[in-house]
Length: 232
Ligand code: SAH
Ligand code: DHB
Ligand code: MG
Image (cartoon, rainbow, N blue to C red; front, side, top):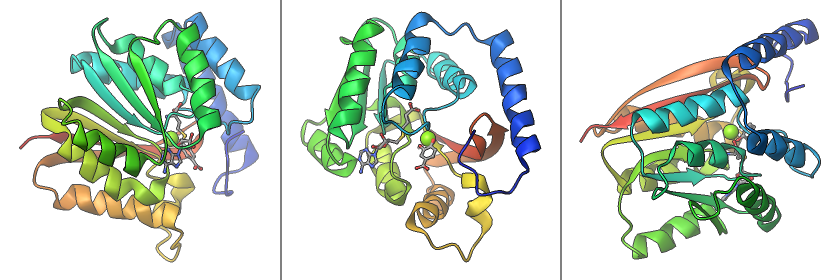
């Protein structure tokens, strides 16, 4: 069951889950690596906040559509979304994924190795803002896609770095913009919510971005994502 702050009844959450399971059973051939990653993650201390399988497949399709060769992910957890991205990359492609918690990073590295992607994925451990600052000193080639999915209070900082490391055509996806509807409870000033409002505000003001936001219900409850294309 998703983390819910009650906007829906249990019966409604069950229905969202049932529909997701139905869709996933038809549309997704999850390979062994993805399935065993979820199994490993559930058997560990990690929160159940990996992207849903159908969202993972969507990220994979977006990366493929955009012929991505270099992807940046902020927030690795157990590497589930990272493995979806790795599957979309060519063999000479690269995913750099940033994770604060060394325990999460080590679970992710083991899942990624199991999936055979240890040469494609690099997990960098530490507070992402510090890792990004360090990365800037390496003058990295721009990324073709950036997935922002870590601590929501730093979303604005992450989007600024994403723009810094982008080229025209880079796709930027920000996860978890709805947070069970808390987005629009304007008296809710929790930094994990204000961080979402602030990143949407920056997307709106940022002339280099065209973007949209989509709310979703499913096995992860009620949430959503924003997606922006760098146009200038
Ligand atoms: N993208 C993953 C889910 C990420 S969950 C997937 O879909 O499979 C968010 C992750 O961000 C957690 O593992 C958390 O430890 C990490 N995180 C939180 N604060 C962070 C920070 N300041 N820097 C880097 N990672 C952070
Ligand atoms: C949370 C974080 C996530 O990345 C997510 O997908 C869902 C929930 C959280 O911190 O609650
Ligand atoms: Mg998320």
